[in-house]
Length: 135
Image (cartoon, rainbow, N blue to C red):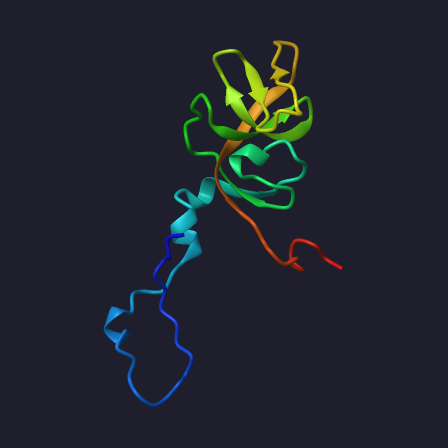
């Protein structure tokens, strides 16, 4: 695991820490995870189909509409009125799951299909958030 430097202050008095000179600027998750704020939105993953790329049920997806879609990207798409998170196979015109238990989805010309954005990051909460799971 690579540690991301972050300054913290606990209000402790006494001897100065030898690490005081290494304090860096505060960490902003917005700056770290979002390149295009006006084109970015969040989604809540559900289901088992993307496990092999590290996206699990309940994860928060950071989706960027500004990024150019490339073959093999994880995307959020509107497929026949349903939002899905899949890997785009633009060469074969398919949506692929990252779980062998789910078959590829063929994209036909009669399907309603649009890519809503590219998943650039995902966040896993290890405790339920009241913001995501209101009581």
